[in-house]
Length: 95
Image 1 (spheres, rainbow, N blue to C red):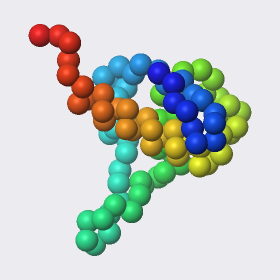
Image 2 (spheres, helix red, strand yellow):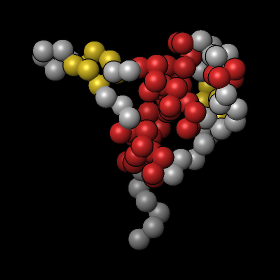
Image 3 (cartoon, rainbow, N blue to C red):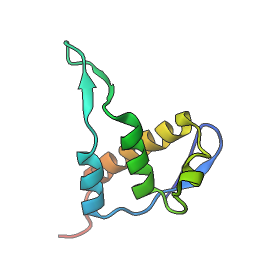
């Protein structure tokens, strides 16, 4: 699958296994305020890098990832999360 970023750059996402999806989802810890409103993700940089290294199809070396701005890395992470969550809601073709 290919994602188009707001900057115009395109990235390819791997077809993740169930184990990879679970590992990525388990690595995300959200922070909330006193009223239960989401504030963000704990350990944002580590979490985003893990998602990019696991989910991007292609070069995920430091040099390659540093070519993306922080905003682009967060956008990729966010779009990947949406795909992972939506992927779990899609009907299975098996019976």
